[in-house]
Length: 314
Image (tube, rainbow, N blue to C red; front, side, top):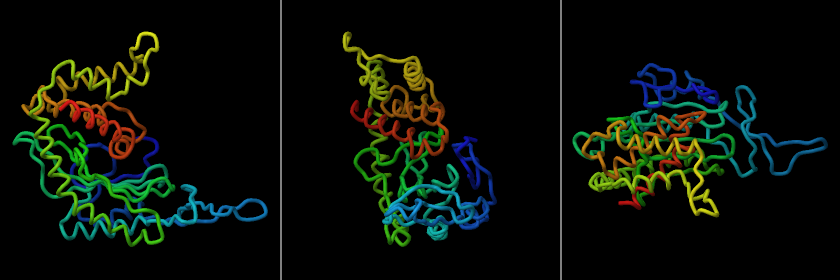
């Protein structure tokens, strides 16, 4: 497990990220948070210097071990982990979602969870996608309570970005005075998720019918890794390093023979090309915390670029 993952749990089958401690499925979300020590609270303390207080500057401090998690202004108010757990438990009880995995990163600076939603997306009968909502809260002042719609392609466990075009994908609750009450805005994300996943299904089916040729694959990997940013001023050609070249070749290889590439929806199509980049991020793009990167970090950004690029080809 990566060094900056402090704690993580999962319920049921081993999740796609292959990380965490398995816990009893009969536990409630709140009980699971307690078991894995995600139940810690946070508060703010005004920063001080010799002779007085620093105006408007506060440290975010864990209640249990007094670890400092970040520096914020006096406008920032914490969203407590157990408040989130309570909301999630209500949604579980009403069968609106199932919490599959959750964890804390970097000593509790960020807490995240992945929740499975009812129903599936079918590109065709052999290419099916499960629906998920991912959530993350930052106690270091860098991230609000943030939820994101995503999908996991069953045939290969690729994590796909929902809302493939202009449908809304991200929802946030700011760390403002009423943030604790507004954490239930996650319900709004669930309410809008249906339209977002309808959009995802329609565009996935569309991409599955778009043939891709070799020159488009080359263009795609160059755009994906932004090689035009490193142009040779004399030859007007990109300067591609050994590492970047290897990544480009890997994505190309995954398009030809990656997981699920033999399905008729993916073989030689724009849908298959997009999934080659997604598979690269999920399984070959190394990060200190793979699960966090795939859902919220550099991996997620790479997937968004892959999506916009493949849509431009289609």
